[in-house]
Image (cartoon, rainbow, N blue to C red; front, side, top):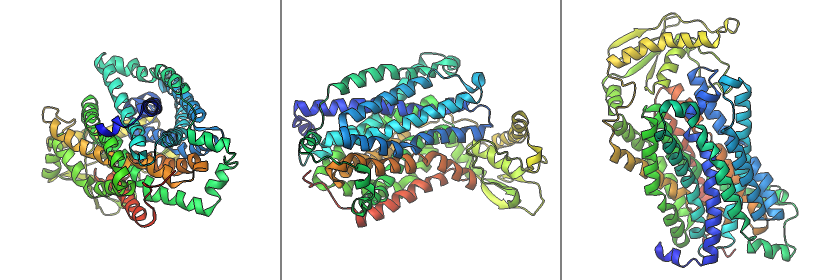
Length: 552
């Protein structure tokens, strides 16, 4: 890898550095939310019950991903019409400003419902900006790269998402250790968002020094620019077919492996295994530090053996090994929980008619049957359970090992008897408190014992997950750029990338959480990334071409 770097001349190093550094800052802005989702839940969605608030916070996170394809259309068209440089300069200004404003927002407690509304609007602006950012930066670097080196050149920008995530974790950790938990919870959480103002100034200054892509300048001088990038990209079947194949045969699988190996792994540690958030972020930061160089390794390797082979192998490895890896993370991060599940398995016994699918995107539903109260409490505590049907009309109950705990008579679901938020919370606590005590008697820990936390093994397992990320993500920019013609490249590659990453990847946390809550198994949420990655392997292998020898 050192020899490859030495072969990059000074002008190209400046292009790669400027594009990549600006993109690091954009990803930093975007991922602050994911890293602080627990705090965000309390600050902006505190008017809901705990489960619904967390689910709603995840959906607000996903909202930023939902609009990314629309940003790809708007800014992709602009990039193919007026140029790569000016377009991704605009996106970084929108990104940095909207993130900094989050640090100034009033909370739900002080401003009421207007606080989460404004917060979600800012998330949407972030998503739109990011939707236009990636295609511009990837295209810009690829169009500066000499033939046979695009994998190496673009792999540097592939490191930026992980480096931005890493930077966000470091800043959050620095804030946490420099003040008391009470101070961080009260006002310190705002500092990482406000830092975006400084990063915005630096990024904008760096990008202003860049010149337009030489390939774009040549097309412009020759009068070959596309006059209708959207029409040429999506109204012509020859190109639309490639867009669809790139989505299902490349970016969908890449996205779920990317988010599964980083964000979902962090959420799994914090929310499911109840690991101390600071320690969870530290071990994830360590894994990112160890694995990030592999983005460049696999990017450079793709110039020799091909993009397709490396990306699809990463998807296949993730699909085959996610279950054993996450099982091992549980054993070494919270061994007491793993032991309790094996020694005293939990079973929810209830009339199926009383059990709901507890997915509440608008935070208005109340789950008040005994079955729903039990399942909601167990899901919040990260406890796996099995389902067993009771006779119609029987009270819901929980069996922990050989002991059975019977709930109080819960309110029947009736829209005319809605509870206030306080009454609903009291009803939840009425079931959760004795249930928690019974679980403790059976050996279930309320929190992970950090003295029993096996740091080396957990870091090794997380590093393996991130190496899968580097396999699928390192070569993806070069593959997408080479799949599409130059004059509509920005528009064409941006849409499948951002539908894959914005929708398939961005909705991974909330989808997996809902699956876990419905089935009772803390590992069942992994079926979502596994199935998507497997589909990508099949479609990509059968229908997408290798592009490493493409001339332009």
